[in-house]
Image 1 (cartoon, one colour):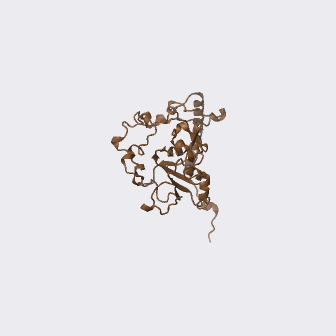
Image 2 (cartoon, helix red, strand yellow; image 1 turned 90 degrees about the vertical axis):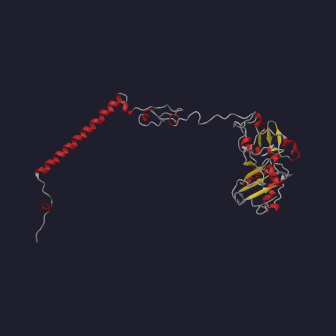
Amino acid sequence: MARLTLPSMLPSPSGKTLAFAFLASILFFLSYLIGIHHLSFSSLLFSSSSPPSLFQCSIHPPSSPLPRLSSSLAAELDFLPRHDADSLIPLPASYLPSIPFCSANFTHYCPCQDPNRERLYPTMHFSHHGRHCPFLADRPSPPCRVPRPRGYRAPIPWPESRHSVWFTNVPFKKLTVHKADQNWIRIEGDKFVFPGGGTSFPHGVESYVGQISKLVPLKTGEIRTVLDIGCGVASFGNQLLDYNVLTMSVAPRDQHEAQVQFALERGLPAMLGVLSIFRLPYPSRSFDMVHCSRCLVKWVSRGNCTRILLF
């Protein structure tokens, strides 16, 4: 039996092969030295003079000064912006046309809730209080922006706004006169304050909601959203916030002006409207409860009493 040794298994290169390998190693070593020399020369060149034009670009100064890094880090890291939005996305002057303000008598103009236009519609089912938008020919021409009331001030911050608002922001006194005995709202200095009274709250809205909570699970989380029809100044929805219940308050613009403007100024969700001939813009099951206190809607005549809680 032949016995194989390790040297016999290894290849025996010829002299030509060894010479080729030696020459390739020399070339690799020379290229490595040339690369090191080139990098060191470039660093010395850039440190003594500005970079060549090949590396130059237009640099815009930042719009606001930024904190600079320390001298040791600034040479390595630079996070300043190189461009601004105006230079990247130029907009023509006609892109955002200037819209003038309407005249002063449009301050409280609500196009689709105009008391002059509602006289053209029947009063059955309160359809005249519904949403009736003007035709194109009846709209202001040219289009204009509704101006803010004279003397308008920045709204009182939340949550203080739940209890008082600036008089000049909602300058309507009718409720303070017509509902004075019901304690809806009153004027104190330059503010409107909301004591929590109402037509249906002879003992205050806090007592009223407390009585409801004995019948309806307001504290358990089962009731999360409520629709309040005929909300007045939204004292009912404001009180439900203490139960972590969010209320959408709805009321029309009537002889007491737009009452929901008080609600919006207080920071409470509200909209102009009435539950009459038009469906409200909410999908099915949006609300866990509907509150309608003295809203004068004949529910039974139109089959609207199903799944509605009335108080």
